[in-house]
Image 1: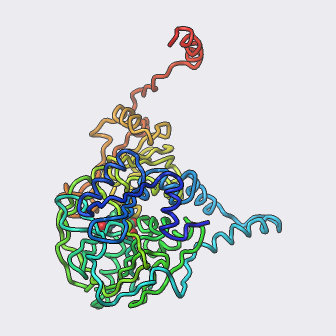
Image 2: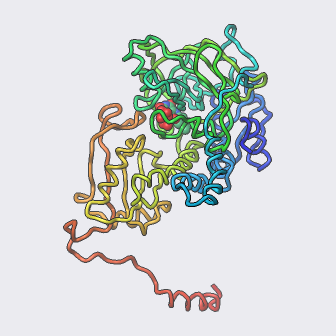
Length: 481
Ligand SMILES: Cc1cc2nc3c(=O)[nH]c(=O)nc-3n(C[C@H](O)[C@H](O)[C@H](O)COP(=O)(O)O)c2cc1C
């Protein structure tokens, strides 16, 4: 059974000894962040601060901050199960014969459960405030000393495309400016920013936006997924939780939000209005620089009677977002392999902050194959941000960074094997020559072939013979080792 809401997930974390309640008064300004950083670095539990200083609303942090918590969030024993369900879906073919077709029915019924369902009422609207509300009533964190202020860090930001009417839900942090306004940090490559541009193109002046904070974990998680534009995150959330996401219409706009959310901010972005956002201690482990971003005006807050505020911090890796990203890596591999079946595995080590380093193993079939894979990855949605892609042969385990460093560096003639390209760069990159535009590097660390102009012999990797290993296994014990 899918979690009904955030609190049911919190109970599951607690039952699995993955949650610690903290009844001491702790300050959302810096102190909660320091607790969370220490906890994640030690593989510790999620934290529920029952008495954040200055607010009566409890704060949940690190709910996704380990492989086990991600598995609990997606209700699986291994993330491989989710990938397996995707493979099953992709391989679904109309079976032969009546019996085959009948056996297929439950799977088709399962598919029906992915579509979100609009309901007339939801706990996220137990309290509706169109007046007398303030963002300062919420225990919103300042994460790092150099931050420009307090930031909502786990928001589900909903908007609609003016062209297709389709919904987008993205996780874009929001800096609190005052009681009723906040920054809207959708980076230029993201769907929220595209909706904004399209609305300006159509001559509109305001863009309705709704922000849900805290919901069942699969729904929250779906906001970070690098999906193609116009693919509804709420449908993917339904697939992940195997039960439809219930949506409720906002009080002041035509947008819909998850009915089980804890807190919802309804409002608009005035097209053309920009304000300085940041700096912010970011997931690169550096402060991202202040920049101009749109402003979100809150016109109404709806919430549960006793909401829980869900948040996270990012910073020097590994942080909670590393585990969220690792799950993306595992879940999206089968989808990547649809387009690139030669890819055996991919890995994004924590220190590479996802976009800085992607390790890919391939089954090499023709000259230049590694370079084809690099270019394909640079052309694949948000994988365009990959600053360094290292392609290795399929016998290299990319989950083992030491093995990759060892074999890749042995295999390259740098001038020959490194490919530089220009293109879009992650907005958070502080080193590119221009914001959002710069160079990327691909490293072909595969074994080189004569058809690629390499005619010298290529040595094998050193390995002891199996027979000697067996003999020494026995002698080892006798030697008292
Ligand atoms: C904790 C966390 C915070 C994030 N903050 C931002 C942000 O402030 N701005 C942004 O553009 N992307 C941010 N992201 C990444 C986006 O959520 C991610 O790229 C997502 O796929 C965007 O959705 P979209 O493709 O619908 O735009 C964040 C991700 C996480 C896990």
